[in-house]
Length: 174
Image: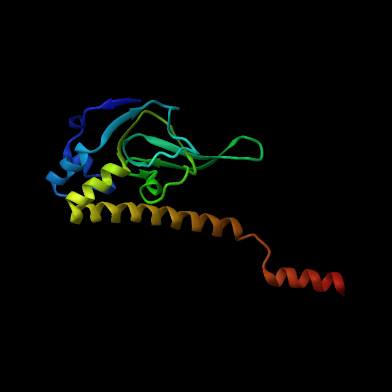
C-alpha cells in the first residue's frame, strides 16, 4: 500500500464516489483533507476478517474481491466483487465489531479511506453535509442487503416447501 496525493484525482473523479456525490466542491475538499487516498496492489488485503479497524473506503479505481473465512476447513468462500464507486467496510462507521469479511484487491486499486473518528469530526463541523455522507453509506448497506436477500431467495427456490414435507410425511405414514 502506498499513499497517493489527493490531487492525483480531480474533484469530478472524487464526486463519482457515493459518499462525496451530493457534496459541494468545497465540502469534497474538506472531507478529502480528512481522508487518505491509498493504492493497493493486486492480491493485497485492504481489510482482514476479524480486524477491529473502524474505517470505510470508496473505490476510485480497480476492483476487490470480498471473501469470508470458512471455519470448517480453513478456506475462503467468495462473496462478491466490488468496483469503482463502491463502498467497503461501511459497517465500521456504526459499530465496533470485528470485520466480517476479507477485502482483497483483484487488481491495482485506489481507494479513499476515512476513519470513523475523522468522519465524526466532519459531521460535527458540517452536520448537513455529514448527514448526506451518512445517507449514502446507509444506501450502500441497504443495496448490499437487497443483493444478499435476492441471493438467499435464489438459493432457497429449490428447497422443499411445507406442502412437500406434508406430502412426504403422509406417504411415509400412510
